[in-house]
Image (cartoon, rainbow, N blue to C red; front, side):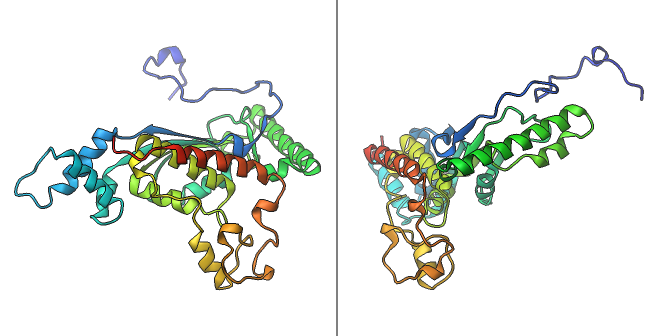
Length: 307
């Protein structure tokens, strides 16, 4: 078939992506990652919708005919019993939450997509020009000037090569992107049930095995959920000891860090850990601890209520 002009193809729609070939690049914006993680609820049922769905799904089990309305106090009791796992937990799977998370690097995205019961929409790279993307820097790197200077030089050199190859027209986007470091910013859209969201927050809240990024995403997500559904408060406790870590370490299995204060209740020796000093002892850890305390204070301030 011969090539034709765009004017001869009126059915064509606007491209999803923005073409940047030949666009002058600005210096890369390097930011402290932990201060730039953003979690938002895209869609969630309202409290009345939540209550109606749960009550109709669960409370009809013993009825002769389907009932659509129930006394408020009975619905309150049903919700409380459900989330104490005293009723069929399948009902939790009827509440779907869609949320976004921005400020991840590519390592962080691999942690997120391990949750196989979630649904994802990812930010693309093959047909989206990455030259304007920010870089998410871990605080421990940013806190060491010599390492941070080298880090910025290497990242900038890789980005500049990416742009040169793309603009040359000799290498296509699916290949040029492979030179880009894993520290550039990524976002994801996520869909999950409230049941799996609770499990995610508990797992990723582990401060010994999971990363500080995972911890902050979990805390920010849980805070946003409690703003929507304050009656769920107490189901996730980020101050609790990390039981999986404790069980692993108590058996002598390799873990990354020695226990912090809340987990230091078993016998251990330095040789069983990959690093000999705790995670919170590294430079830059004050950034995480400050954000953590602020998020926990916000969670504490939420009043548990069914309204």
